[in-house]
Length: 107
Image 1 (cartoon, helix red, strand yellow):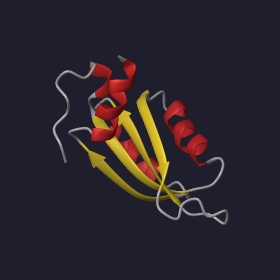
Image 2: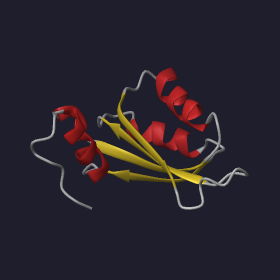
Image 3: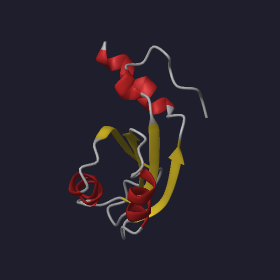
Image 4: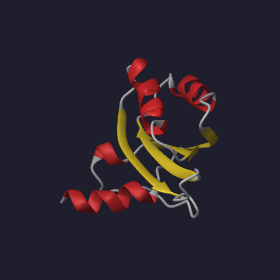
């Protein structure tokens, strides 16, 4: 895990929730809807299919959600883990390089 870019805009640093999810239409809507219903802002989203994830019968994708740490985070992670299409979750407290790479496109 790398350290967050000190030059990155403040909105691109924070806790990252890394999810491995089933790859089919509607999964991102279910995840983001859960955050919206709890008025928990998602600062950034990135998603890519995992190798083999392009299979029309399904597959897996990796989702990274950039979040601001607050007292509700543990509870919302617990709720995300209960979603049917979420296979694995990891909380990365020091951010993730995917958002540092995306920050380069904002300049």
